[in-house]
Structures are given as structure tokens and as C-alpha cells.
Image 1 (cartoon, rainbow, N blue to C red):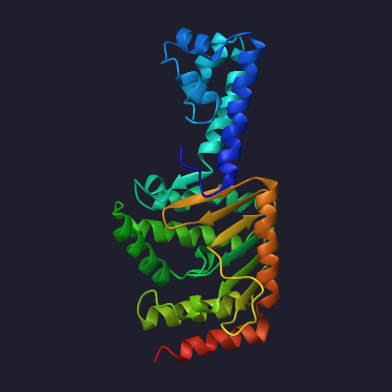
Image 2 (cartoon, rainbow, N blue to C red; image 1 turned 45 degrees about the horizontal axis):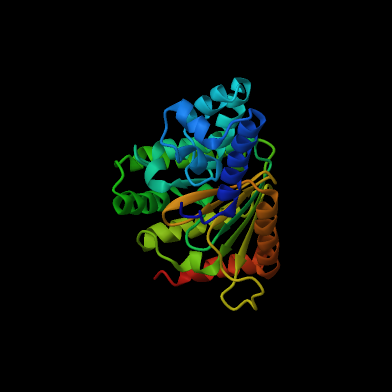
Length: 282
């Protein structure tokens, strides 16, 4: 099995596999005996307990039943599903379009108190205008050949941004200066988006920093990521979303965010960079 870009995924799978092995040993059975009783190929049990093959829900139920541990199946199934959700292809998430994906974030956003968001390529979704979001989501839909529900997806994205003004939330947001320069849509779309960033900066719950081109870096540009409280981080790759839950890995993203925060500029200096970017639109 190809190792996931996030070691959290494989670590979770290996922990589940080790638990299956412990259950089998406690039952006094060999891997071959479990496979034979389940009606599997003799090598399947070994593949499952060595994390070579991820188990299905049915595999876990069969394993626990054979080993006399039916009561453990629900928790193991939950752990398995959690591991599989750590690395999810965008193609799978967007197979019915983009609207449902936008809406799926609402519960997470509503329960998160402290957001740390870093974007190196596009304006963060929570800060996007309808026109900018339309341009971006249209390109994503075309690239991934997803069902076209861009209008509905944009409406859902804008609606979920209400957390910026409602509830007990705090937002520490960093963007690379390149985000201000990359043109998503035409000049009018970008001017509207950059103007919106200037207005967002006045919100009491929002801290917006910009990492300047000329900054003396002690943290290189990274892939876009978000940290939700200290419980979860999500990393956005071209092909997939990686959901990080291992405390050690969340800690690394938090450390990277802190270092990027140190080289970012805020307030008047950030406004100057945004205003300068508007001035180049012509």
C-alpha cells in the first residue's frame, strides 16, 4: 500500500491493525484460522493485521465475531472510518459538485473557536467575495470535471463566512503577498476582492497578516493549511485534503504558523501591500 502524504493516516491504520492482532491473539487463534473461518483467502488476515489492506466494516465485524469480541466492533469500525477520512481525494469529495462540500464545513466552523489559516495561492475561502469565489470554483469544476453547481456552491461558501461576524470565534489569517497578485478572474473581480480584504481587516475577530515578497524568511512558503483550535489541521493538496489529527503533526503546523506570523506584516503595512496590489490592476 502506498504511504499517505500524512504519516497520521498510516499511523492510524497501523494502530487499528495492531488492535486486530491483539484481539486474535487473545482469542488463541492464528491468522490463518481467522481467514478460514471468515471464508477469506488465507493471506487476507495477515494483510489486515499488518496494515497492508485497510479493513472494511464487514471485515472488522467478521474478525471480532470469530474472535469472540463482537462488543469491540463498533469502536474499531469508528477508528477505521476516521483513518480513512484523514486523506480524502477531492474527486471523491466533489463527485456530486461543490455545494455539499462547502456545507460540510459548517459544523466544524461553528464549533471552532480559534482559527489559524495560511494560504499561499488563493484568498482564503472565508474571505472571498462572490465574484472571486465564482471564478475560483468555476476553474476547480472545470479542472476536476465535477458536476457544475458553482452558483449554489458560491452561495454556500458566502453563507458559511457568517462565522466571521457571529459567535465566539477568533481568526488569525496569513496570506503570502503572491495571493494579492495572482489574478483569479478579471481586474474588476480582483479589485473587488482586494477591497474586501481591506474591509475585513476592520473586524474585531480577524487578524490578517501578509508575508511580503521581500521578507527575510526563516519559514519557506508552504501548502495551504488551516488549524481548528488544537484538535485538527487540514492541508490542501492538488488531489486531496489531508486531515491531520496527530498532536505531534498539529504541533508542527502550529510551529510553522507561528514562524510565518513573525515575518508577516499587519495593520498599516498590510494595507499598503493590498492597496499597492490594487494599483497594479490598471
